[in-house]
Structures are given as C-alpha cells and as structure tokens.
Image (tube, each protein chain N blue to C red):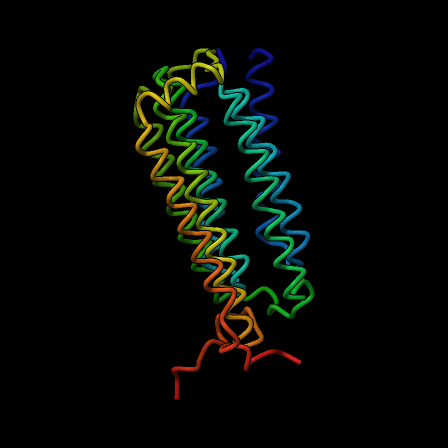
Length: 101
Length: 172
C-alpha cells in the first residue's frame, strides 16, 4: 500500500549515517550531541517501520523508550557541556587539555 | 504510486535535506532550526506509518523540548558565532568515508533480503490501544524510564550547581 519496506530502512540508514558524520567530523561539543540525537531519531524511524511491517505494537513501544532515553541523555550531556564551558571557556574538544603537560 | 507513496517520498526528501543542512551549518542556531524541520518531518513520517501518538510525542519532546534546550544552551554559551575552524578535509574526509561505508553496508543488507520488497500495509495504532498495550506489557520498563529521567534530573542539578568550586575558568 505505502512503499516497499526497504525504502523506509534505507531512509533510516541515510539519516543515521548523517548523524554519524556529524558526530565524527564536527569540532563542537553541541554539534556532537546533535549528531547523537539524529542517530537516535533514525533508530526510531526504523523501529516504527518494523512495527508497521509485522503489524506488532512492540516497535512503537520501543520508540517511546528511545525517546525517553534520549531526553535524559540530552539533559545530562548539555549539563556536562555547560560544566566544561565554565572550566575552560570553550566548547572545542581540542581545548580540554588540562591533563596534558 | 498512490498518494501515500508520493507523501512518503516527499517527507523523506524533506528529512534528508533538512538533516544534511543541519549538520553542515557553522552557525549553531541555524543548525538547530534545520534540525527542528527534520524532526517535524519525522513526526509526519510517524503519522504516515500509523503511529499518531508517537508523532505527537516526537513533536512535543524532540522538536519542542529538546531543541529548545539546545537553543537555550547555545544562547547561554554565546558560541553561535564562535570560530569553529572552516571545512577541514583531513577531518571530514574519514568521517564521510565511514558514513558512506556504513550506508553501503546498510543498502546491501536491506536489498539482499527479499522481505524488504514487501510493501507496507496501511494500519493505524490508535493512542488508546497503544496505551493499553504499553501499560499492560511494558509497565516495568516504563517505570524504569521514569526513574532514569529522575536520575538524569538529579545528575543535571548536581553538575550545574557546582557549589562554587568550578567557577575559576569563567571566560571574560
């Protein structure tokens, strides 16, 4: 009725790889966290597609848990970034070199 | 190709374009705004795939709460114009290579499976049924998630409060 199952999975894979590139390549802790968010979003898309494919509600229940976990992760991650910014005055991971001598 | 398929491909194009723009912006505020568009597209996709409750949750939590949190932090830190170094091939090259490798593996795995050509049947999980299902089968997991949120709240309070011992590096 809608589309082949593989196309939704391919969309989820594309979004996931974009999040991966964002996490790996950006030199800014906030963008790194955004990349992790994009990856979790892609996983949620895959779960909803699987729930529709097999007509089971488990997939949608897991998306609910993914959203809860990612909300907690964002809160803690942003608080850590704020703490690190207070200590060093920067969000560039290269400037965190207190332990280096 | 019926109206659902057209809608799906339109939404997919919007999500991909918004996400690609978001991860390449140097201005953090623009990146977060593009990401909001991407998450709204995802909410539409959930609605199309028969999950209206999850669509509402996506709009409220992802596009609403989390992105506003990101915006607040960006504004607190005043880093929206911070000089992140320009496009560095040495950094983006391996990352994009890894992303393409991952995408290649995903495409091969998905399209080698004959089950992936099965078209999705239209079905809608009404919020009422979904709530009954979650509260009957996954009650414990739901409670664990709520505890996780509580622990995250306490952890954030502890980290951000700091009791005045980590204010030495306040930027001028």
